[in-house]
Structure formats: C-alpha cells, structure tokens
Image (cartoon, rainbow over all chains, first blue to last red; front, side, top):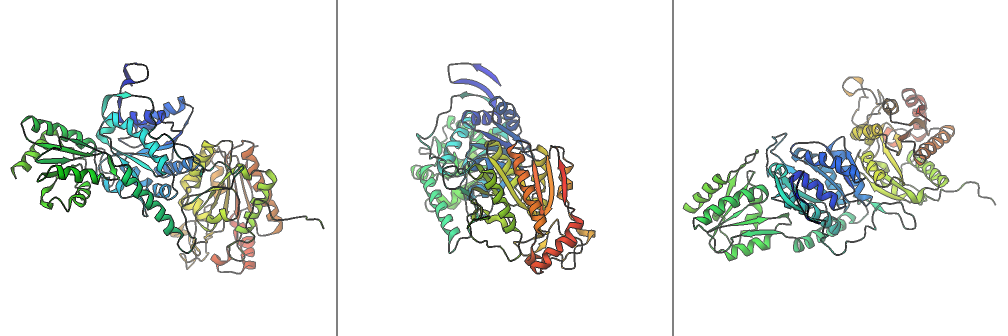
Length: 367
Length: 245
C-alpha cells in the first residue's frame, strides 16, 4: 500500500480492489473474518491476516470454504460483525451455509471475486455467477442483497455499506466483484467509516449466554405445525419486498434521448463507458445504465430510462453467456420490443476490450 | 419429606420426544445435572446438531444455535472466538461428527479450540430411520446395509477417540457408555470433566458416549443395552484416550 498523501482524515491511497475490501471491513468494525485461499481473491485474506492481528480482532484461515461460512454463521449468531471472501468455486461451496444464514436471519458480508466457470473454470474475470447471487444460490426461497462495485473506491465504500445494510435488514449481503475489479490497482479516497443509518436495530437475538433474559435460539428448522415454515417464509418475503422498495441503486450516463442504452455492471460497465464516450465524441447518442445493486434489481429506474429514451435499443453486455439480460427482458417486456433488447457477451473468462464494445455498438447502430 | 434427587433446573421439559429406550434422554439429563452443578446455564451457548438431538433447545434452557449437518465445530469455533468468556458446548451424533463433519471436528480439535464436545455414538442414523453410519459395526444390518456391513466396500467403523488422540492439541478424550448404571455414573463424571476443562481453559475436550438406538437397530430396549455390552464395547473400548493434565 503506497500512500499518496496524508490529509487529516481522508487519505488518498493506492491499493488493489481486494485489499480495499479488507481495509473497509477493518474501518466498518468487522470483528471476525474467516476465509480460505482461492485465486483471484487471495489478497483479501493476506491483507486481513496482518490487519486483523494489528487490530486485535479475529482472523482464521478455515480448513474449507464450508467451514469458513459456518464460522461466519457462528460469529454472526454470536452478534459480531463478520465477513468472508472467496471466488466462484469457493462461493459454490459456501451456498449451504449462506442458505442457513438467510434462514436464520443473520447479517454478514460475503465477497465473491467472480472467476470463469463452470467447474474449476479458470482464474480470469467473469460475471457468470449472476444467477447464483441474485436468485439465492443455495436451497430454499431466499435472497441475498448483491452490490456490484466497478472501482476500487466502490469496493471500499460498498463493503462499509454492506455491513450496515446487512445489520439493518438481517439479510446477508454479497459484494459481487470480479477478477478485474479485485486485481485492479488504482488510487481511492480512504475516508473514515460513515454509518449509513442513524440507528441500527439492537442485536437482542444474539447468542451471548442467557444471563438475565430468556434464552435466544438461532434456528433454521421450523417443524411447528400447522404452518411454521410458511409463516417464516412469509416474514422473509415481506422483508425482501421492503428491501426492493428501499434499496435499488443504479447509475446513468448520458441516458437522455439516446438511440442506444448499454446495460452493464461491474468491470464491464467501466469498459463499456470508455467505448460509449468515444461514440459520444463522434456525436452518436449512446447512454449507459449501470445497476449497482444486482438484487434488488433496479427495475423502476430502468423503466424510467426506457420511458425517457423512447425507441432506443438496449444492448446488455456481460462477461457471461447472458444472465442479467433476463432481468432486463422481464423489466422491459411491456415497453420495449424484445427484438430491441440485444446481447453481447461470452462466458469462460472472456473480457471485452473498449474497442470490441465500440464495434458492437456500431453494429447495433447499423441494424 | 426430603427431596434427594429432582429434575435438573436447566432442563425445562417434563418429557422428551425420543423413542422408548433411546439414549439421548439419559445424556441430556446428565448434561443438565452438570450444567446445574457448575452453574453455567446463563453463560453457555449450545450447538444443536442435525439428527435426533436437533430439538435440544426444547429440553435444555439456554442459548442455542442450530447448525448445518456436521458444521457445529466450525460454528462453535467462531462463537468461542467471539465470546472467549462464555461456555460453548458442542453436541453431535456419529453421522454428524464422523461422516459429513469429519473435516470440521478434526480441524477444530487440531486447532485446540477450547470447547467441550459431547459425541453420541449410536452406530446408526437414528432420525432418518436407521441407515449405516461411519460407526456401524461389521455385520450390523441397517436399511442401507441390509445384508450387514462388510469391510470390503464399506470399510471398518471409525474409532473417533483413537483418531483424535493422534492430534497433539486435543487435551481430553474419553469413551463411555450409558448401558448400565455404573457406566451412566462414569459418563456423568466424564461430561463434568470435559466441561470443567473448558472452564479451566485447558482446551479441546470430548467425551464419546456409546448410546442406544433400539428403533434404529430394530431391537427391544433391553436388547439394545445388551448390544452395547456384547458388541459395541468390544469394538469401541471404553476408557480415557487422552488426558494431558
């Protein structure tokens, strides 16, 4: 970590995305971190192995991803702020635990530095875990909140937000990074922790020993007749609906009377923006819509963009064979003809260059 | 009239949902007695396993977390790290600890986590109806080894105390049984020992308890007691396997 200057509180520093994630956790008061090495996220456990020790907090390299997420489950049940990180194959292993965390209404932060799949895949950046992250991932009917940074600054900011959001709603929050954002080194403003909410609900459900109160039980099994589990699912679903109305984040760039709106998140949105600027300089009206929360999906905002840009074509770009495009199609099905929603992308670690995206936009214009 | 013996205060239920002849009820009572005698109910966190003991929070009146199958040692590790001053009790069965959760128990033991583990070995999967467990004896018939367990293809039963004893950071390992009053009394002493060790900061301590599952074994409660005496103890010798004090 190289410090560029040392102003009072805000520091301009140079770091990798994966390291900024670690420092943000430190600043946000993360007491425990459990993880297992896997490329391309290993800088986070390496960073936190040192920093957690310095801060006298808990770092434990688990024997597996499964153990790591169950340690997250335990620490969260015990009332601590807790985080884990991994990359796609490891996140698959964690899905059992994430389902239990969601079922047990426990807060936690999970970093997924997505790499190519399926299987061992490769270690290139990818966005092929969109379905897994936004549809729950493990068994049962649950959702995780999914934040998608596209810069080192956002890695830092969103991890801090993630702890607050997770504590606020008692829902696990996933930071959906990727091999590019995680490995990217760029300067960012390392500001102090700014809480998102004035007040967070007390963790009166946490396991601390039942001195002076009734015992707390963190459970995910609901056998109580006649409809215990159904009532639990209703409660969770009500919460998810609340989140859908309160937490949709997105960014727009030149989405005003555009002929083409590119929709992309994470690293792809950064690359796309370069291509869009080049087109804009040539007088071509291209805009960018960037979801920053992948779940909840910013549907209201996207509909608004479609209304503001009547007749525009929508080009979805993903480092996958097409996953987010299904959300785009569902959102726009009543206002944009399906033929005007186009896709550009590939899985397996394919990364677009700005020139490739520039060419693709040109092709869409000529259609 | 003097009351000589009564239900432990930390046990709230007046009956259990366990099958006739099941060992869990006896073990829960012994745990309750140990909790009362050491006065730790209000400072303890108990991990419930997957299996018949999952509903342990219906019986023991303390903070409980329900763990995924086999993961209790990982969950307990984190709880103990967050609350080093609290008492963490891990309760697991043989499918939970010795099959699906083998990695978690070995590594928690190897790290020397200062936790107390109750390992209930009844040589079968009770809750799912009597399937072959890692501790099922050679020749023992279960619904998934209907012709009897064979060494070829299924391997031999895992002796957990002996396995964990090879790890230098384990501090106390004992195998007991609850098939007789004498053995129940020894089990009580062992439970108290592994509790006391955590309170004294000694480190990873476990008692493996040979227990009856007459319904899973398809035998009468009396025959289940005999099965432990005549079969299980031969393969799983009782005794202290590690005591580093």
